[in-house]
Image (cartoon, rainbow, N blue to C red; front, side):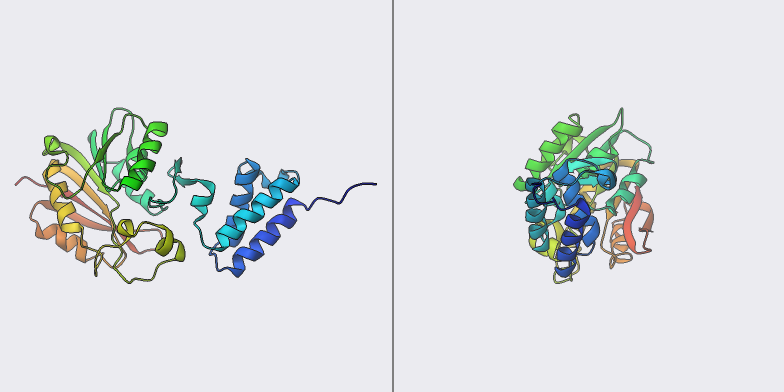
Length: 282
């Protein structure tokens, strides 16, 4: 007699979607499909033509769905985060890169020059994505946990990127490059303490990579000062920020007297997202 019929992939996905929706996951169907694609070892686009999962695969999809329903980040479960045509390895201890930061990368890739510094490098998302042939890229990060992921991603995707273990506000970090850098980019911690964030961020992203004081600007004065020292006259600065800082951060940068053409840029939803400025001579 034939054995019991295996559940179709459509049935497995429907169950996973229902579980994730009940747990309050923002994109339950997408997350269910991404988990299934991860387990099956295929791109999400091939799910429509995939054969039914075997019992072991169905059990693994169910296991990962349960973890995702507990609001463990999807990227921690798959081990990767897509970013600007890259697949970055991520996990506990490092900030998971977001789509919004790709806007800053795209702006940075249009700037002239070849010497680039990424301050608050995290997983290496900006440094690796902005790197092109002929560029000299440095990535500064101080978190021991984040440095593990940063070094792993650099070794796999961009071994010529220089990883620097240091505090981005320390005048000694990359001091030998002062006045020679063409572009400084940063996605620093900028969320005000107490601001509402998703469970995934509150519980699983490193606190010090997300929050920065009552107004979210605690790190900005030191970061802007260090960027100003690194940049040559005519060099460019780009910093991602919270959507409440579209006026305060540009004002902070202007007040240094070291930058001109200070412009705030909006994301695709129309929210203030990053500020850019050109270094002037002292």
